[in-house]
Length: 538
Image 1 (cartoon, rainbow, N blue to C red):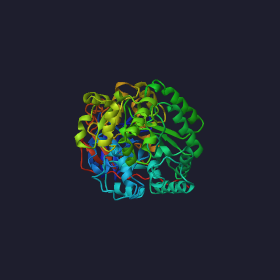
Image 2 (tube, rainbow, N blue to C red):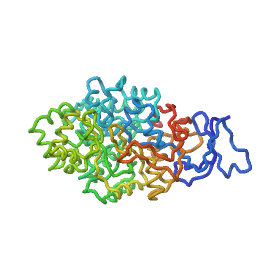
Image 3 (spheres, rainbow, N blue to C red):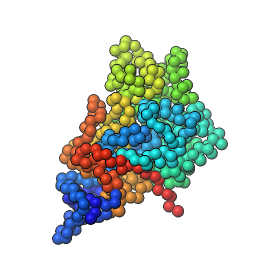
Image 4 (tube, helix red, strand yellow):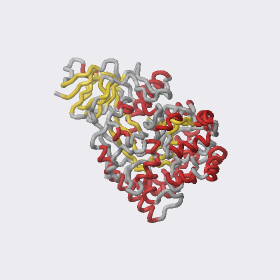
């Protein structure tokens, strides 16, 4: 007898093809047969140890979160319902050029401080790894969902060059090439950059191009958070397209948005740029989240010169009145590179999380609202928060445009990514709602995407980018990473006011043929493992 037969499911297979009714048989963690309704007529239907009646439910591949920030959450929280309940069966970590491998004893503390707003301080984590391979081995001990990893270019630069704004020496560039190659050989699927975050932003394009050549040689892809999503956004996208062309490296554009007032209604210009690149032969994909607000850390808004030298130097500058005034001028008048070249509007910057318990009163308010309550300027409030919380505050930035969001998600190379930051008392709802929101709001309610097309964006297409030959499709021989959802009720429960509310309409999620969500509830199964890069065909 086989392990499981899922009966009478409406199969949406991840290719974009029309749905069909079928019985799907799972055994040993894989799909072993698919018996379509027409083929089953007049013959004996498959049997198994367990039968699940899927009448009225859609069966699809598990959703792949192409941009996740669960690097520590997967280790900290075995339940991890934030993603499992959405139907996510694979997350891609190591995003935006900053994560926790490769590091050494000297650089780990600086990396932890720099991304505390994304992942917490990490004081509750035993950092018993240093290399990419060791981190992946740690994930292999058992996690809620599968995880792939990108070598973070900023972390590599911190390890070799430090946190200074200068060009790498030839010897340093060679060492960075070696570290990127080692990370890919140990199983990473590509390399990420955060080119508005220190120290990755200090890399010139020639340096990035050399690292991307290493990525390409190992069959990976480059995933940049590029140099601007505000003023100069189109130029920043074009810069990455040209860089990847010169390096011969596949390109995946992270959270490909067009934000701030300067970019309202300009998504068609971005899409035309991408279409031209694709027509010229570019290997190009992108991901987006289906919300208008962004999410990052408060310290990320500072000008790059204020962040040179790392977290300790940032804090030193913030406590010096003269230097702090220079920072304020760049933020509020000039438009800092950390704020994408746009003068900060404190009405759009909402504090979503802090590390110090005594600062909880700021969470859920914009910086300007908190400043008004205290009778001080917004910069005074922001500066105090950064210093007292040791650079840890996370923020929502309400600077997006719905028409841009919809236009970009329709594109044929689009994939889904939550960019979900799970840290903080009031995180962005995308961390808990991205994938059911696509299916509920943008398929059923708005009709922006067809069901079959949307599922392909969330499953088959990202699996192809990750070069995973046996994931992302409902197909015989593929791994049984599967989701069953009700197309009539599936929806994100999370909102800006209640960001941790679970979704509705997703009663079953399987990873490797084992139920991680059953009857709408999280089981105790830890079926996730590290998903390593497939070897380059030779």
